[in-house]
Length: 222
Image (cartoon, rainbow, N blue to C red):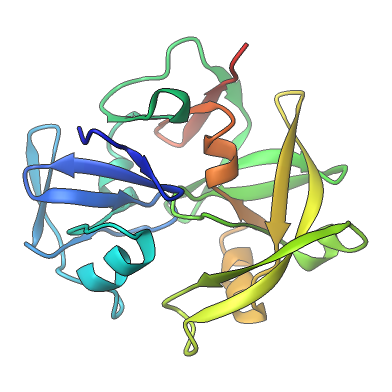
């Protein structure tokens, strides 16, 4: 375990090969060394993904990392995100968590939440510092700021979006979440998974989250 699992809005995992960014929004992992050791098992993985390498991820996270830990490996274990205690654990289950409705999205995981009064599928993306929602769901909502984000899937890499204050309800609890809108080509890719958006850092910082075999549970602080 690293001494600091939550850094600059990202989740980190430390193993024999070094420190990795944890990304439940990625179906695949990669490592500069070609391997990642998790719970005593050494997995052979590519040294880069779609042009993304160690330097690219390190620059975005803001600290040196050896690669990315995705759902091809994470999906084999129960995992826990516990922001309040700066803890990310693989091979552990969330104790006394409340199950929430979830859905499988092409090997990734997602939650079903009420967003702006609508029942919506959202990818659970631990690599997302900014949350995103389909344009029709943010229409008419108050603008609270603007942010610049990045995606290696875009030819122009970075993009900017307005942030909207959108009411979100999970297990009957109202959450303060801000959402942006993805560029059209990325929004289309997200919709192909059956989701209408993605939620990451803002959810993980408000409750502990456990994932096991696609099932998701949460624990909110008292």
